[in-house]
Length: 144
Image (cartoon, rainbow, N blue to C red; front, side):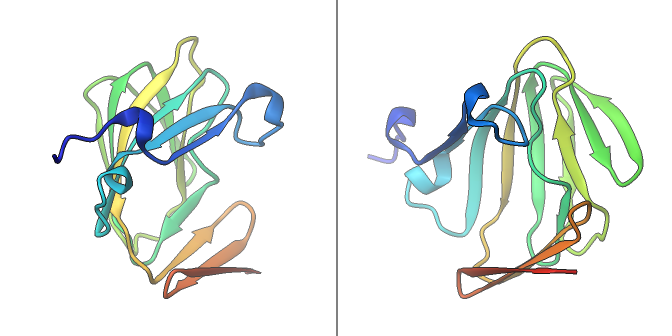
């Protein structure tokens, strides 16, 4: 049966006590839980004070975000803008502008994160000045 049980899918999470620099979060990898390999569909929850990722951009992967609830702050390059329920955000591959989303609000921020699942990519982490190269699914990081 193609119905996906959210309690049985791969999950990434950090609790407030984990000292994760991004803060607490939960990410349910729903596409992976359904056996899909060509694209990812993640349901992400960011409590107040958290952010979605390190500032980054992809050479080969498209990313799409749809805000379900809460209010977030989209950081793209040097620009910040508020995003809320119903906001759609597209990050085309190869657009060399780092981005992430922060929850500066007082309630959980929930959103769909959908993107290409490529076994080959180059990810630029612009604030850390690190490049992650993924070749045949194997990731290596170097300083830029």
